[in-house]
Image (cartoon, rainbow, N blue to C red; front, side, top):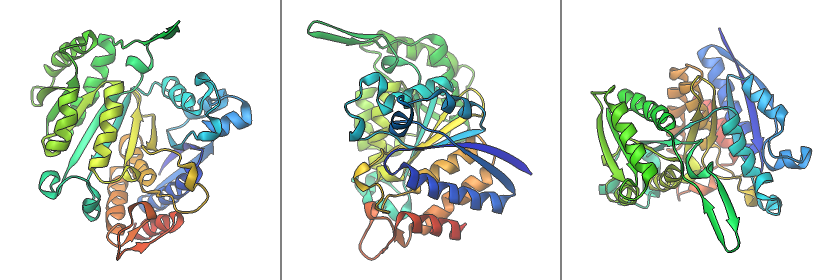
Length: 352
């Protein structure tokens, strides 16, 4: 029987509520598919600032490194807005990604049939089976480049090495091989030198994947095409800042940012899994948060870090089935059963 050690970073706002429901579902999956899970908790974000004065304590890094995987709720909130940039809750998130070498962020944008009406895109454009995987480079680019201020000017530096682009490209090509063998690399090579290096490197890597159809697209055109014809995309690979923007756009095409999971991966099996939404402090403690994105993040964990693909598929199928009749307030439609955060977790467990 496989035994896995998971570090829980429940974080701020609704983080503890949604993580608790995801843990409940993971425990049910473990029971059903014959593996065991051991949990350890650690602090990240605003709760860590309150307890230790910093958003990422060393103890948290050590616990995460000793785990098979990490499950994160959400961090941040107005309470910590007066913190300097280097000590804001979000700095802890950037720090843990760097400390764990999490260079590849996978953000699926998937339409769940029962939620199709929630998409702002017309039915004939979005279709019945939109399934896009955005692969975002996570530890390079403008978010990690040199920055500064001088008098009335400020600057941030976009910089990539061949090695950084090559490793994220291989993650994307490997994913494309397991899907529809179609990859779109997004850049701004008509303007940016870093994008010209990006494109050149992706083309070199593509020689090792002759079965994958590779297309290149400028980021502004990609933003337009995601709305105009999202079905043309399968896997998209792009830089840190472009991926940040495009994945949020794709999440809304799918109908609700509260439904979408993400995975941040290293070169090995260790990964950090989290919903893409924020900490929503305005609804924290009210029992109305949507835990499904976190539950679906558990499914990604089972698939990419824990080698339990059958359990992952079962959780995803359970979520789809539960959505046929049940909704949390953020995705509620008339005629459905309106349920709490905890009730949604219970329903998914029962369906499993």
